[in-house]
Length: 385
Image (cartoon, rainbow, N blue to C red):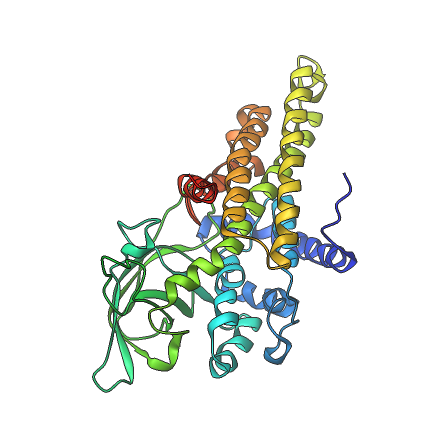
């Protein structure tokens, strides 16, 4: 079916990104996976290309685009190539919305030009050991100093994508304890300088997938955070997180859809080249039926994604809409990618084939950004259940 969600500008951008990925990413992607991170100099290339500045206002060096659809194009093209930009997706898709919405003009002047160039990489630290999806249960604290010049940050975070290489991390911490009436209150957000004394990067976590993306543990021991690095208002961060979750969850759903579409492409190409019993694997009825089923699933995912992209740009994507989109696309992606791996036979289990990487990479989409179980709870609540 003809897609109407992208215009000529998006498609021109798609061609630029496709060529860039082919030239700068695909030849070295195995090296990035082996070392567990993307070289910092590559982020400068993304900055020069304008990737980090697409949605940054022009006065801070960006292109001033309001649409999330350019990020969707990047997601589709990376999946098509079986690659990624490492932890930089957090920099743009997760951190930028908070900076745009809650940073002061002075903070934007300090941070956004370097954000755009790739000289200052951002990550976000919400999850803590033992809390998982229960963000209101966080224990990290930030206490205002007696002279009112800085906060003293103490605690730990885990599963922080991009956290190993980040220059600034948006850290969520308690500036006031929870109350029985309001567990979510008292949480604030700080743009913490990672060179601060007492700030430490712990283990670089070994994941089963997304190997080119650095994910680590962070700890804070009496870290002094200047008051002018508080993002937004004190105690209001839980509301900020809730406000940005629809876009975050749509981004995850978009990734799951793109991985599914790419897995069909890889499976089709493989089965057309592979022969068994003197015949192309693609010529067997089972192969045709499996790929047909997968294509029908992807067509449905695409329709849901495109509707959600339009809703987000119109400011109409609700938390329940985003939860439904994420739940559907991530759960269906698990089936599609698995079937496409099966069509590769034993070679599907080898990481030299993109389908193997997709199998492990896609698995986390049902966990981060809120588990599938949390998505079901949100949808059920919206139904009045």
